Image 1 (spheres, rainbow, N blue to C red):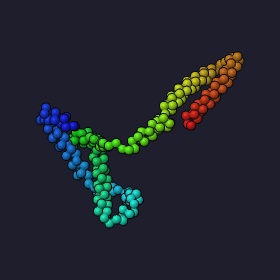
Image 2: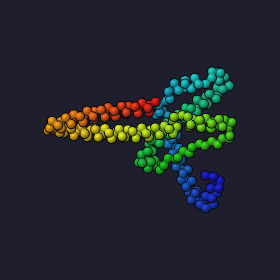
Image 3: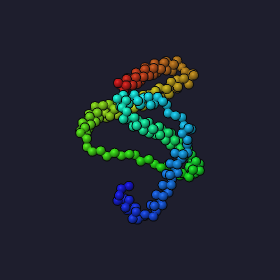
Image 4: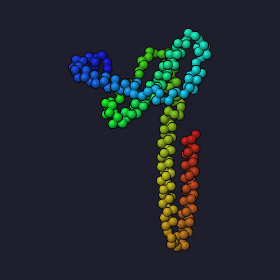
Length: 217
């Protein structure tokens, strides 16, 4: 909320706004209380020690061996440990509050919504280089090239025709199978039709494999 919006709210509906603010403040305090005191640390599995080993491998040895940076290392390790436990506690509390009965029992009607952090930066010298590289990628890379979309649509169209062809061949084969009594002339015609169906099916399968190869490359 900007300053002008806050001024309007304070001038027109200050009393109702204060009531809502007080209610939200109580809700957040209650929610934060369960985050910090609802679950003890000894109830949560400790973090794997390999995590710190991997972190230390990313830090230059010169910094690790500097005595003046030792307090900073201790502070950062403590911050990482607190963040680990707090994130797990929050996940557990949020999972419990997914149950409407638990929300009612704990008097928490809704979980406070997190707002994304926005960073406003000044113009940077690599802005033009980034824009030109992005434009080149849009024009040349297949992931964003519109030609790939057209090929995909064409592939779907051919596959739908292929499915219709197979369905028609299947119906004709089912008709031949249900005919138990046939004359010699009908049998001769059926053999010719079956031979033609077999050729058409082979051609359709070959066409399908060609399209798959084209889309794969």
